[in-house]
Every structure is written in structure tokens, then in C-alpha cells.
Image 1 (tube, protein in one colour):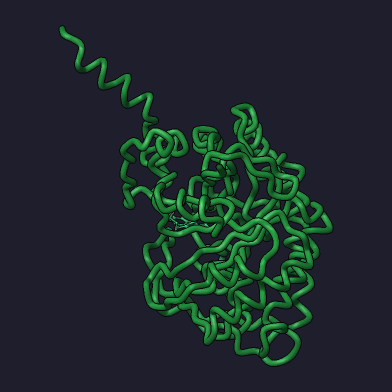
Image 2 (cartoon, protein in one colour):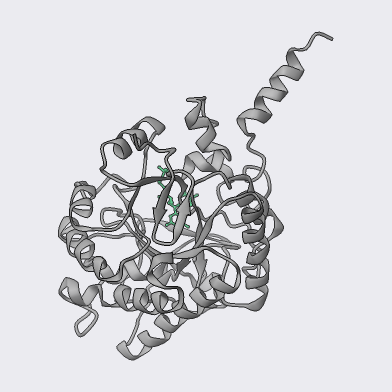
Length: 368
Ligand SMILES: Cc1cc2nc3c(=O)[nH]c(=O)nc-3n(C[C@H](O)[C@H](O)[C@H](O)COP(=O)(O)O)c2cc1C
């Protein structure tokens, strides 16, 4: 019987199990967006995941949306990512990189005053951004001209090439969570006219062009795409999320991708609906689902055939050995949100495995 511990082939990716690590921005790169040794240690600790999907990584300079998130546009970044992929591979793991453009979520305070770009000149209003000078409101972005779009696509292609040089097993295109590609997809953020605005086929044009460019670098069987049609994080909305995912699920079949990675719900609980059923029905490739899954529910959706794998976010922050813990139905460590973006080793590389916890307990229970 297929369960979450069954191996699976996703395109050219051969995974040992279906407990995957969702991409998690943790702000542990240096001020030049170069990954640190801490990042290598963090991912190596989690190498037992069927697949590690490394955090949102800037495809182009000057588009920082967090403080100290990594990039993949400079030689120094590529060299540093090599250490990460080597460390993961040395432990038998597999790792793809999430390639990303923040669009209107980028902030001038993080980019030497540069104004962010977006499909339309509409700011994020339901949140604030962390900067070295404290929390600030998002700014109104500049609307991209159609003739600026090829440079963005080229940025993704170059990042994909760099990811290859850095030794990744593939890439995931970040089309979720209100960043640039998602801003184009959803009609609450995209008010353009012309080739990239209006009907779904126009709003999806940039995503599809990026996929094509990245597939040209990697081959389709090492490229995945992440989508979040219901997530209202970053002031995102769409008038028809189910229609959007249905259209995209059908259209993505043209690429024969390694996988589609779908977030099923909304961080803020404002938009509801079932996007997993239409995705499963219409997408013919491998489907990864994510958001709020417990081990038991993950087991259920895999055995029922609703999805092929489940990605875990917060549970992987606190449980480097998550697959083993789920196998043993052991208690999970709880993650501390105050250290999610804190830049230090604390709350990043110091969560214990079950074996470490048990060894410690045995030590303390030994008679003196
Ligand atoms: C600290 C933190 C950072 C995140 N960074 C990313 C990211 O870089 N890219 C992305 O697509 N999603 C990101 N997410 C969303 C997670 O990948 C995941 O969708 C979310 O945590 C829900 O899954 P879970 O319920 O298993 O935690 C982040 C979430 C958290 C809590």
C-alpha cells in the first residue's frame, strides 16, 4: 500500500518518501544575500525529507523583500549554495531551490531606495515589512511596462542556470503567496490592460513564459511550480480562485513538470474554497499539497490518492527528523515563531532530533 513513507518518482527526482520540506524563508544569509554555513547545517539536518524545497531565493539583485534572504544571482551566492547542496547530498538528501521575485513586496529600505515593481501600482496594505530600521509600511510599486518583462524572464532563466551550477537537483518556481508571479495571476493585484492583464490567459502569461524559460535550462522533469490561489497574505485576492486553479492545472499539463505544489488555504483565513480537488482532477502530473497538514491527515490524503506528497512547513522548522517522528508517531517539538526570522543559530539549527532527546533523557535519568 502507498503511504507517506513510500518512495516516489517526480519527473527526474527520485524521492525516498513523501514527507517533503516546504520552502521557509529564515533570513540566515549575510548582508549580500550570500548563504551562510548555518544554512548548510540547517538543510543537512533535514536531509531525511523526501525533498527539501529551499527557501524563496532572489533571482535578481535589488529585489529584497526580507532582510538577509538569500539570492542566486552572484558568483559568491552560487559558491555558497554549493556548500549547501553538497552537505545535503552527503547525507543522502535531495534539494531544489525556490526561485523568486518579490515584486511589490520588496521595499526601498532593503534595496538602496529602489522602488519595487509590480503588475499594477497597488501597495500591500494588510501587513508591514521588517527592515533594519524597524517595521515599515509597504510602498506603492511602479507598474512594469510590457517591454520590461523580458528582463524579468531572463532573470529567472539566469537564476535557474545558477541553481544548476550550485548543484541543486531542480528548481521550484515561486508562483505563490503574493509575490511577483502571483501578483500577475490574481485579478485583485493585476489591473493591467494589454498582453499581461485582463483574462486568465493574459494574467498567466508571465508565469507560463517563466516556466518555459526555466524548462529550457533544466528540462521539464526537474522543474516544479508553487501556487496559492486562496492565500490573502500580501493583500492578495482573486474573484475566482477555483476557476484560476482549474485553468492553470489544465494548462500546466503542457509542460510535463516534475510537480505542482499547491497551498490549499489562506494564512489569514479570509478566502475559503476547495482548490485541491480541481487541481487533482485536471493536473496530470504529481501533486504536492501543503498547509496545516498533520501527520495523520497527510497519511490520509496519500492513501486516498488525493495527492502524491505533502509538504510540511512549520513542523520541519522544529523537527529536523520529521519523517522519523511521523513514522514513530512521536511527539513533535513546537516551533518558536519569535526566532523564525531572527538571523541567529538559536531556533534554526538547535532543535533536537528524537534520538538526541532520548539520549539526553537517558543521561538525566541515570542514577548518580
Ligand atoms: C517562517 C516562514 C517562512 C516561509 N517562507 C516561505 C517561502 O520562502 N516560500 C514559500 O513559498 N512559502 C513560505 N512559507 C510558507 C510555508 O512554505 C508553508 O506554506 C506554510 O508554513 C504552511 O505550511 P505548514 O502548515 O505545514 O506550516 C513560509 C512560512 C513560514 C512560517
